[in-house]
Length: 80
Image 1 (cartoon, one colour):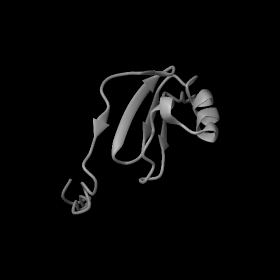
Image 2 (image 1 turned 180 degrees about the vertical axis):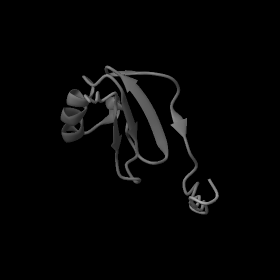
Image 3 (image 1 turned 90 degrees about the horizontal axis):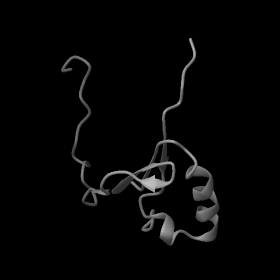
């Protein structure tokens, strides 16, 4: 049964302040040029999440407060 990849997630380090293509350094810019050709990409640093479709931002940028989720416990299979 064939499987089609419908998107990718690029997760940068949490301390990375710039994840918008306009502010990337040279190395990250080269990487972005390849990723911009992907049909669906979520580009994030854990606090800021941006979805792109073929290199163009799709929807709003999502921001989480630093440290959000540190106190969240995983759901046990029995509780689900």
